[in-house]
Image 1 (cartoon, rainbow, N blue to C red):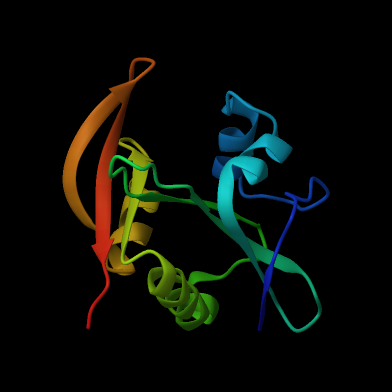
Image 2: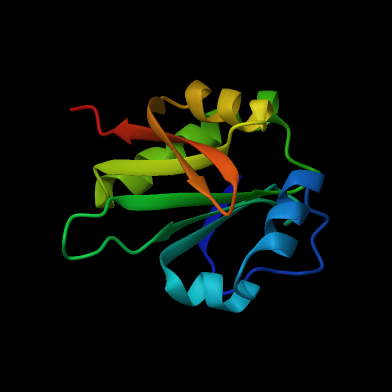
Length: 141
């Protein structure tokens, strides 16, 4: 497994339907998502296939937490790649001790995924008439 810093969102990757939907519904183009992110990591398998992109939006000076975003490729397998994802999140938390993620309320798989990796519900919010669950993960010492 290879984890590398990325400077783009490859559009030739076959993303999961949910990730495709997120990209298509984003209010900004993919390159702007990368530009607004402090860091973007790509996780590739031994053959070089991109399995997952994880990025962190820049926290603000007034205390907004680092917000994690993910795009998952069709080749990603939760059971085979869980350890690497956990390690990736730990690396991110060395830089950002508290990570926050927002998951659409009806996206039960996404909620389960976040909780599996230690994120806990801290609230909810509505954006453009869509309900989101807000989850946080705190660095364990």
